[in-house]
Length: 251
Length: 246
View 1 (cartoon, each protein chain N blue to C red):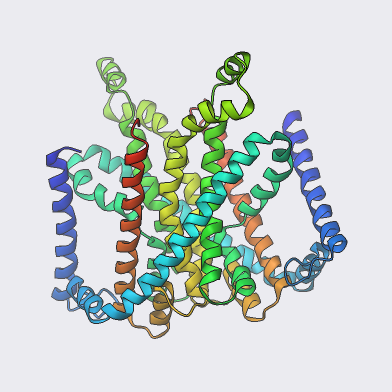
View 2 (cartoon, rainbow over the protein chains, first blue to last red):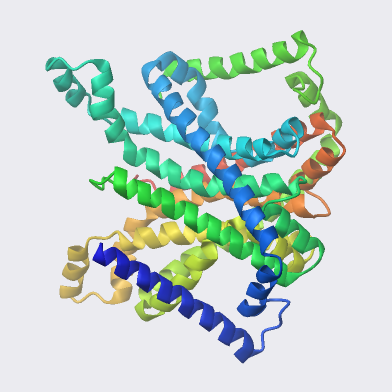
């Protein structure tokens, strides 16, 4: 536990140092607040209406997490189905691969029109932004398993379920986590963009309101919230990866 | 991919489109639920002049921003690899900027650079630049420590090691970054246009949403997807030409 505590302390020290450098640079070089306001001003803005920022953070976090969790579950199941049913895979996988090369986030506009400005609409956007890469990478990971290893297990009398859970799924995990880390960033982007189509709370709403008010301080406050949420969520996924893929099979 | 699975892929796509068309026509679904494929294609044809103009704007923003971002990303990664002391200072700052979801910068960039084309180019350059910077840096760093030591023992300088060892080792990763960045460039251009623009596919999508014109949204998405595929295909073709040893 000691090295982790040390790392956390160093990280905290780094963040505080960065904050001090920011404050000093703005005051020292006389940077116009239009470009970069003082960090203390931004904190003051947040402290003025902490409720709005807290509600926005919670709302966007909920949208992202619900969509991400559903996208992960359905993506992995879908990858398994494709793995087991080659006909289905050949028919549908090209569509999935093509979906990786088109701006699927534009469909967010349609989702918001279908579901209205609800939490669910943004969760759906976060869902499909996670779902496509997780499906593709689950299948990639499952396909990368050496068939001889599966044959060996089978010769010892392992059932297909046992082969799946003891060999194929664990071997696919590193690939799946590559998609999860991508999905963690994408789902938050989806949630924020989804909120732009009109909503009352959320980080996207805070960004939009600050822009319309041309308030750079409020804009930076919202950007800090987005960074906090994005980094926190990404760190959570990376932490889960280190715990689950403890043998560190990356690349 | 062999012939059979390619044929199955085409069959699958056709099947999806046929099912889509049949569902929309058969159940007589209103356009806000699901417009028929032929309806969307008709809308693309009907508004072809406006869509073409918008695609030109968005494409220009994406390609210009992409070129700037790619150049900046590779140069920055090269600089940080060659000038080690710089790395300790600059890398944390860059990572901090990158920790913000890229679309969260859009409103600020829009305030700084205005509603015109330049704000989109800046946003695309930012997104593309970071994507390629990170993949180039990972590529430069993945060389074997012992290979570096070996070259150094033969008297190779830092530049020689970079040119003969690091760059060739990094090229596949840089190429992968360049490919991923094509999609990202269009996404960011479109998303930033949704916030405010004088033209472009994102602007058409946003306006059509406020006018509740569903068919037009689908038409703009279709054109955006075609644009993205074309860009992706072009960069992929260039890559196959120049990184022939993959």
